[in-house]
Amino acid sequence: MATSFKDWPWPLQALFYLGLTVVIIAAGFYIPGLPLASVRAQLQDAQKQEKPLEQEVANLRVYKQRRAELQSQMDALQKQLATLQTIVPEEKQVDQFMLMIQAAATSSGVSLRRLKANPVAAKTYYFELPFEVQADGPYFSVLDFFARLGRLSRIINVGDLKLEGIGNKSAAPNFRLNPGASVTGTFTITTFFTKAADAPAATTPTSAPAKR
Image (tube, one colour):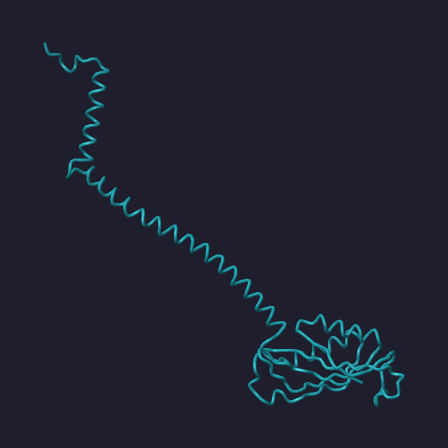
């Protein structure tokens, strides 16, 4: 005699409903035309498209990291270039350089009697701008003056140095010396720049007024 479904024990009823639910869900996924099957197909297509996109994103992350490294290198090179342009500027900047020399002499207690810019000498990658200098002052003040020249922001070479004591008659100047002066002499101060002058007249020697 057949037993009614209502008379089944509740565990069997629960298993029946569970199985029926699984069958319905499976049918929804695999039977064409049903909404679940359509969503499943879209999901599979999206997963297929996701894989190449993930690969592209991984490649772009490498480029992003590389870009940060290149930007850091560029910033460091920009700072280095700014420093080099201070040490060896593009332009001659004669007036500015002469003021730097005069300031170093004044701070050291040295008197500049002549500061004359000589013609520019062209080299392979740069230009030399020599200055003919005549100065006098106490011995240790002159030493301090040369030390200050070495601490200037621009590269400077000092050559053709000829110093004599004031007591030497051949070194006696034709102007009045400041009190305490013990040495006098001439030398050449050479600085450098990288850009060619546009106007030929810019290389004409100029003299600073004698400090008396």
